[in-house]
Image (cartoon, rainbow, N blue to C red; front, side, top):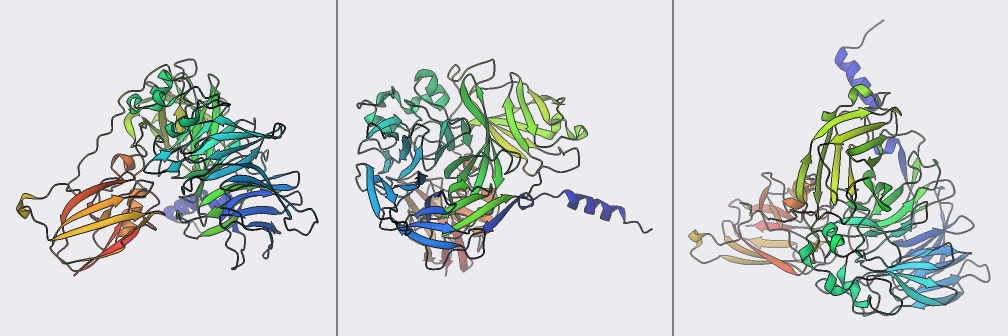
Length: 637
């Protein structure tokens, strides 16, 4: 018998347990004819199993045989106004256009809509940001929809109910307000208990992405919607004067204003998404893997899906978000399960861009039947957290040093987004495997309600030797079981301090004697783009660069040491929690000079001397997910 060398044996064993997402969940692309621009805005399954899809170009398609190489496409309707939601009810298709929900019916069975009925209308100003999503049907036959605020240098609500979730009562034929405080609620859905959750994107009053459990009369945080809180039918008790920047955190605001609804789960910006979208519950009862009953949340900008496991503490939802599946072709806007437990992902870049790179796509995600070794859920205890895994753990691999926990929060203010603030490390005093063999009880030195807890693992393995597929998650602790309830303690220390780095010179060097050789202006455009993508300068020139950001999201300017846009962008993506605190500037030699992280409608001025060596120097925006499309070249002559 011939024996393998020890190092070869070790490598073979490691490869047996090497994990990839595709080992457990396989992506399959659905072929789309070249003539069809399937920029998915909404989708749902018809009674006959075909997938109904509306597109931002105003079309509705019926797609059959998606598991085959040549799926069928039937144009059902066209001429709609940027529909961003679709639902099937009793064989009819309901579509959320910009200014109305429309019911589409095929009365002569020729697979073409021949009846278009306006269910309800909405007022519009023409602002590009006034998107309309839904509808979501409730068991009583009513429907819910969500409306973006407009954008004019900040979230605005110029016409009634912008920034609201609305309910349409079929019996009374009336649209009534349901909940307020929304900014860009691109996706919403129910958990298996039927409770409604809405996804939100970072922006003014929104420190980071998140999902919130909404009940009638809730206020989810965005101030502009409160313009209509005193109108007939509204059960929202919060008023515009109740909301200001002084609270510092939403948790502190909740203590003073009981009508504020805290997010159930925060999604750290740039780490677990940059533009949360669809919410769908796993109702497959194990047909899609070990996460039955949990929520899946898609992300448009980072082309991936996150997984959420929640619990109720003191009657309110809170819980953890984990990475789930990356690698989709475009921006994930909609998710839906078919009867065979395949999750279909409707995708569009829609001018916003997405890391997948393609303008649109339709893909299926199927479970292979193998169970990954993952953190299945995290539950809060009076002294720390119980981390439950999908498989029995190897007790030898479990020790306190295998876990790292730190907590942080976000600022609640009218500015766009928030840095990660008030970071604090948690000492883990013990880690114990509970009798079920799958749960590890972590005891911490202390807990702070109102904070997000990052839980990172290094070393724990399953009893069969399988390594973890993903090694981190984020738990939102609104309340400690048996301890401080949400709103009872004011979170403190949330003060953002921007450090002026040496590579961000905001004052003219004295040696320039008050003169510059070159004035440069660089601006952003909607859709994560620089307006000027090719700039020519002479070598060794003293430059004053003004960076203006008329877009509706944060951006920066980072000049690299050559053709290094990808290197710098990837390094920024990997900064984790440190990203926001540093303005997404990695501390690497490839960064020559940069601006700060600039809010919408703001600008920044920096001074620098152009490189002495002629050549091409790429510049990028390093906000996570932006560098792939938001880039340009400084040519030094």
